Structure formats: structure tokens, C-alpha cells
Image: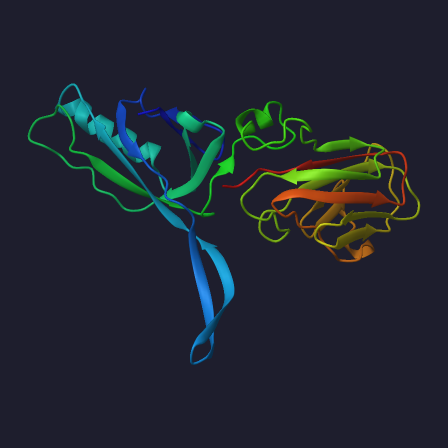
Length: 269
């Protein structure tokens, strides 16, 4: 079994193998979709809603100790590693560019008459988002290293553009990146006293901001939040937002000519 890493929200990382926690299996299932149907007539129904629900991932391991005292210390180590007071990430080094955000369900740490090891212990981990996310973001160095099978290697996807009024942003996720669910952080550094508009032609959405902008103080758009520094400019916008569909999204920028724009996000699978 490949090494399993536990990554806390503050970045602290535990290698289970080095801790003496021998992982037997970690097998994330496919996404857990919930479907809503509306019966239209006696012989016909319509799919009216689809939602990705939380999913349970079983992590099975054994613990080996040197003596009875060490056995109890290992139990405390397990409790600390899988503490449920906040979510944490699980990374399988077999596919090290993905991580699952989880919280643990209640579990039992069995004691045997000898101290050499526990019986197999199963911790069911509830994946909060229902999908794995990439460890890196689109703006991190080496982000696409894990996507050689998916990315178009003839045209390497770009996520930062300078003075380009039209361009393509590739969403490599298996799900849409919607503003209210998995917002993309858009940063645009420009100077204008009028307005700037960003359009996703693929989704037919346009965000327009009329606040004056200065170079070095970029406009940040994150879902429905829009700010320059610590000052919200949502009231000076058209109150719109941008989503990104799986695959290529055709975008354009208008109202400015000298600018840099970037798109920062994780991908989800």
C-alpha cells in the first residue's frame, strides 16, 4: 500500500507509515449523487435536480507496538492523528496531486490480550465536498504535472494573461466551478477610471465593475465577493458572477487594454 498522508488545516502533515500506523486499504468510492425526479404522468418522470452528496471513505489500518505501554501511546497517537475537531485532508502518495477533505466518523480502537498489534481498525472518513481536489492550484508551479493524460499538450492551459482581450481558461474538473460552490479567484491588475467587464462566453455571463482601478491594487473577484484591497466594490458592479464549465471556457475582457488577469482554483474529481 502506498503511504497515506494526513494534512491538517494549518499545513501540519503526518505520514501514517512513519507513525507506525500501517494502512491496509484506502479506497475512495465514486461520487455520491442524489437525484430528484418529478412524476409528470403515469408513465413518465423527469429528472429535476442532481446534487453531489458527502461520501464515506473507509481507511483500514493496523498498529504495532513494542509493549503494553507503547500500545496505549499508539492509541493516543491515532486519536491525535484522526482528531475530528476540524476537517483535515487525506493524500495517497500513489496519486499525490489529489487530496480528500474529510472528517472522521466514530470508530473503535480494539485492544487484544497481547500488545503486538491491533486488529484491523476501520475509520470511516466523510468526504465533505463529495469529491477530491487538487493539492496545488492553477497558479502553483507544477500544477499540470499530474494531468498529462487530460491536458491538451499541444496547447498547454494557461491561467495568467497579459493584454489579451480574449483567451481560453480550461477547467479540468469533472464538475462545473460555480461561483456559489467552488468559486475561482480572479485577479485583474489594471488602470481605469471607467469600467471593466469580464465575459465568459461559454456560460453567457458577464461581470462589470465601474469602480476606478489603479495599477498595483488589483481587483479581486471571488464568487460574489469583489474587492480592491480590503474595500468591497460589489456595490459598484452589476451584481453578476462567473461560472466555469468542465473543459474549455472562452473568456474576453473589455474596457481596458493594459492589464494582467489571472485565474486561481483547484480542480475537483
